[in-house]
Amino acid sequence: MQQTPSQTVGPFFAFGLLKKGENVLVSDATKGERIRIEGRVLDGEGQPMPDAMIEIWQANGYGRYNHPEDKQEKPLDPSFKGFGRAGTDQNGVYWFETIKPGSVPGPDNSVQAPHLNVIVFARGMLLHAFTRIYFEGEAANKSDPVLSRVEDQGRRATLIARREESGGKILYRFDIRLQGENETVFFDI
Image (cartoon, rainbow, N blue to C red; front, side, top):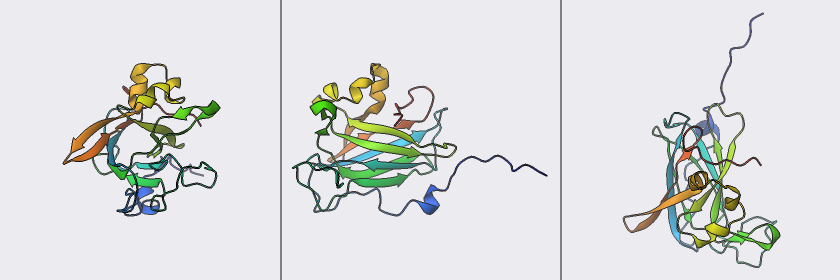
């Protein structure tokens, strides 16, 4: 009897899970400040991951999730679902067209800074990785109950997207490093 050769997970995301346009979360009717999130997914050696998949889940511009368990009095935006999925290209680049989310409630009556919840799927990862994208220049970052749990300022910086302007549009740059120097903070949830 012969053993089955070892295999890593993927790359299968583009074939079964990615659909064209899932990285565009907005339409002309969507309320809120339009932004683009763009970055690269890098492996432990700093090399691009050309076959990763990124999912985001976020509140709308008012700070309400399009989910039945979000019972806040804030308005829902029927033109914004708050979920997106993007694959990386040969250079490890991914992008999303979305809106900047509003603040959402946190534990013990706290308020969370605007953020995107992120799940990373990549070749060789048996378990996907959870992280967040926060926005540079947000005053609420200082008191965010999740971000403040990352005590090391250098590590905390791996969760902050850098703001740029490109052609009159707002762009937030956010690279995801899976291991190694400047590894993105991932959460065990």
